[in-house]
Image 1: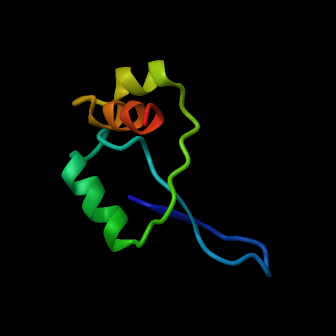
Image 2: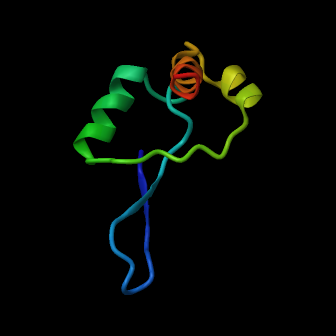
Length: 70
């Protein structure tokens, strides 16, 4: 489900796009996919209200909240 963005020459690394975790696959499947793709950072551009509405099991929202309060 990752879509790779072609980066300009000279830019190291990879940029992968993905839908909101838990939207089209389970949390466990998402975790497997990011480990398999060797993802080291996740940048979320969605606000907390939308995440809570769209993350069916609230797992993603819960993870973000717990991560931001530590």
